[in-house]
Length: 433
Image 1 (spheres, rainbow, N blue to C red):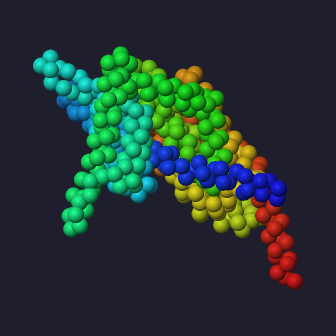
Image 2 (image 1 turned 30 degrees about the vertical axis):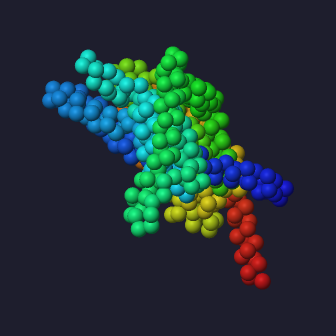
């Protein structure tokens, strides 16, 4: 055991720490997080407009309210890429100690430059809304990272317009951004012109194909998703938030799949994807990383026994309520799960089993797929199952997964509980002497 712990601390912890501290991954995570409130709000409008009661949806159609609800959805959920392009650049620039808002604004402008225009009959120019959402998410991330890299390079090397002392900081920052901003916009403009003249496909579609297809093969297929959830647990085992690493890479895929499902759901068409962000948040990670709500239930059950250990009884009030809201940190660090080799197997196995069971249940039509509606990750199971699948079957599936997770964690925690009781007896005998 000592050798294993030593290997983990000396070899694996530094690698995991460097990955978790990577500025690009952090900026992608922060950029998408900036868009999440709008995504959730847009999902709420979708729930209202698609509530599974025929009289309700008929009333919305007859009154014209459904049109306005759709407008609200498109204006929130449908602009995730636009917000992400700003958020990614802002986060990276701030990490490098430069003006994040200016970098974000330049990135957003660059994103618009690279987006093909729509010309109406009277030659009025418009922007296709589709590319403001999930279809443009990969390009938004690429533009955000590259734009911020160039911006901070200029500012940190003092290649900028300097204003005299006494000029308000906001004005001075605006002038500082002129040179890097002009260079960045011209660069993206030239790239767009070259691609357009050479007949290269739409840059949005090109980047989505180059980045999205390989990531989709890993993050949107059953084998790949099993690997992803096990990696998430692996990072958490070292005390590093696994979601901040895996989600930074795969969240664009899951969000794009969610929006595609949402559009199909609104159109009354078959849903194209099983693995989406709601699938991951509300079915794979029940209770948080490692699907630890099953472990929390095990702790609560064992604590009911008269001869349960003091540690187990102490953990119940600390872990049960947060666990019901998918907050895993109390059990992660309070039990702990982190660096606890005895729990590594169920910690990696439980979310993998959830993915397999839920995927098969949805692929066979036994359970409704997630409609693309996004529930916040803190929504308790059953409620989130109803919201994200628009069906009672989603809630039932979550309960089935919780039972399976509980059975997976039970024998492993019983071993820990046995050792807890031995240690408490030994401590009691030692103190009595």
